[in-house]
Length: 131
Image 1 (cartoon, rainbow, N blue to C red):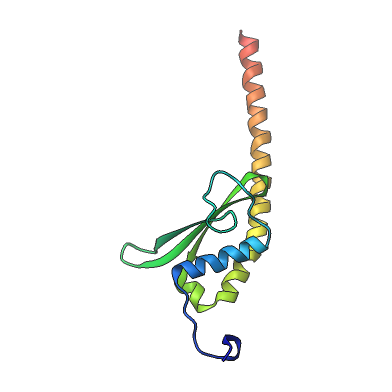
Image 2: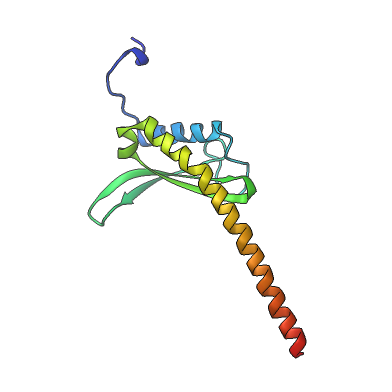
């Protein structure tokens, strides 16, 4: 009986969830080759983690790290309980928020560079004027 024709629950291990999400991210074309993170799956580093909501409430999770375009480092902490509850919704939410976050981060980076350059010019001109 094929898995798609069955309504039985399928449980994935921590490693399998990490690979499924990493493959989805890779298919979207987000990761770029780099030397900063290990290449566990398609230029994505995978690490098992424990997510602590409080000191007493610990849940298993997976951390995915990779470099995206414009040298933007991306880190995802996947809560396995939330992923198991609704895998499709979890991945949909992930991708809906990712592109706006990358775009906004790039805007902030450019603004900060402009401000830093202006402050540097003011400081160096002031230092040159005071000799």
